[in-house]
Length: 119
Image (cartoon, rainbow, N blue to C red; front, side):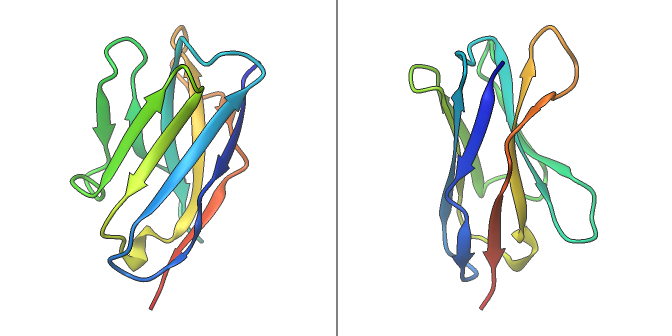
């Protein structure tokens, strides 16, 4: 079983940048598609960015395209989310998630890290 631990959240001002990290332990996360989700107060959890296992193709929510970048290093069992030009509406708890490529749902989740964008 893969366990995920996020870090890197914090309080920043609009326009600032943050890089979130997600480290997998327990077993290698080779063979897992990885993604970042977020959940703002009173809103449903939404997919922010994802990265396939095979081709390494990245995909993003329209609201973060051009500002956020997802990447992974399989040797380090780590996936990152680089967030630039942050906006107040990016404020949320950010979760790292893993999906076994033989399934269609993300079944492994981290505990989340808070990102607050405020002046």
